Amino acid sequence: MFHNSRYLKYLLVYIINVFLLFLISSFFHLISMDDIWSFGFSYNIANGLIPYRDFNMIVGPFYNILISYFIKVFGNYILIFNLANSIICSLILTFAFYKLPKKLDFVYLIMVIGLSPCMFTYNTFCAVLVLAILILNDTNIKIKDFLIGIIIGMIIMTKQNIGFVLAFIYLFINKRNLKVFFSIFIPIIPILIYLILHHSLLSYIDLCYLGLTNFMDNLYIDIYGVFVLLIVYSLLIKDYFQTKNDNILYMIGFSIIVFPIVDNHHIITMLIPIVYYILSQDKSNRKFITKYFLLIGFIITILIIPIPNSEIFPIDSYLKFQRVTANMDIYLPEYSSYLNKYKNQKIYLFLDNSYLIKLYRNETLSFYDLINDGNMGKNEKKYVLQLENQCKNEKCLFILDNSYFNDKKYTQLSLIYKDWVLENANYLETLPSGDKVYTSY
Image (tube, rainbow, N blue to C red):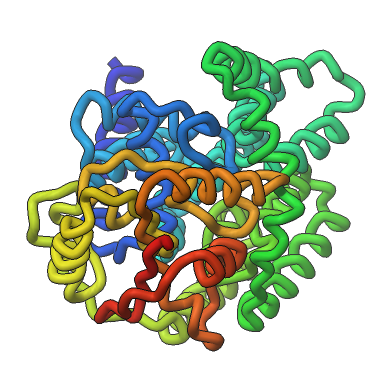
């Protein structure tokens, strides 16, 4: 009877967590392009496309394959994407709820997740998995090292740079028990078999490993982020020398998530397991000070981050009921209407919003819809040659993002496509958005 009562409490907390995360992500969280890309990858897989063969991404497929099952069953909506993430993340957050000394502490943890400019992405998924490692590491479960190895394997097949750093730390911690290290391969082997069977293993290696040197072109450093990093590193390193707590090593390893783009999104995501760790400590004085430090820090963060005007998307599409920037309900239909005029031509959208627009139009996504630096593998020029051959045989329309022509605006878009279009196509017109349209000779 006692055990049944305890399980019911866990179930109730789990349901409440799912509801809170779903509510925040769907109706209060302003959707970002990272959210759109993460949804788009899962959408592609749910619709039968093969990652790395039919479309490009520079992260492992584990997370997106997992989410794709929800989309395939329940429909192509961001709403379903948010619900799937809420269901998965709440499995771990429920245990965090019971591990924290005071239930009010849990509010701080949810606040960190809710404040992230990109609430549900593969980065958040990795952060919650690291949180699971911290929780497991503090238990007396006999197979905890085995389970931690499985989780690290999931992270490797979700975001490889984080995964390999954590695997190295895991190997260092368990150097006297190397047998548990093989548990890492339990999630890895099925994914590799999946890639081999779909003839995409080599392209996976190209996009996720060989092309990483090009990804460094995205280097972006926010001074506020560097300040936060310095504080976090100094506190964690000092704490490790005092306590020799293995969890600190995992948190330091996870902090690689901020490189090479040190911005508020990556910083806040990095803080998810760190906030849990701080709040779970027994030192009441430090916890009291930390709570107020965190609260003040988040208020400052909110004040620094510009919050654009937003609205709930009213049009029946994959964005239905999502909070988007104002006038998106005008922008997307107008863009779609413009593209309809050229439906007999091959259209290339070299835009930050390419996924956003093509998902709205229910069109198949390709490599050319995500042309950020480092997203096209080691040899990016081969895609330009394919583009050149394609447009020799048929008329092509190219739309270049306005950020290409705005020196003050940071963009991850690769310049190689802009240069090719300017050299090989005729200028047609400039759209109200500032994007420039070109047509092939």
